[in-house]
Amino acid sequence: MNEQSPDGAEANRRTILRLMAALDACEEQTIRDIIHPDASWWVLGVGTLDRETVIAQLKQLLGAARVARTTIIGTTAEADRVAVESRGNFEFADGRVYRNSYHHLFELRDGHVVAIREYLDLRVFEEVFGPITAASA
Image (cartoon, rainbow, N blue to C red):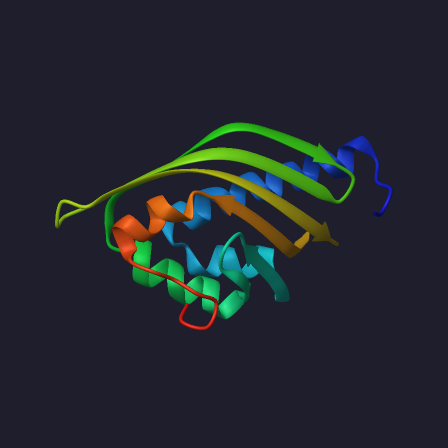
């Protein structure tokens, strides 16, 4: 882990909060600006995804949500790592509702996300969207 000043950790927290808002809004350019092209996104029960797969999946699964709101429960920023506990609420025109709880651990280098670990209730996800694997994402 890189040692960083408290100001650096706070800057990383602000970057991640900006990313979380961009993920809700499917703001592809902001997501690309923050997540490094070689970043890995590991999801519990799924495996590791690359940035392009995450963006495509986000647009396909959540892009049509008429309500897309993630509530941040808490954050912890330390050096080059930011942890976020959140709850998502997504509602679709076809009546589907997707609500889940998340824990994300983001690792940053030079202001860009280089690794993400995501923990969620995969059963809740699959009830709304169907089965998912790293290969099919």
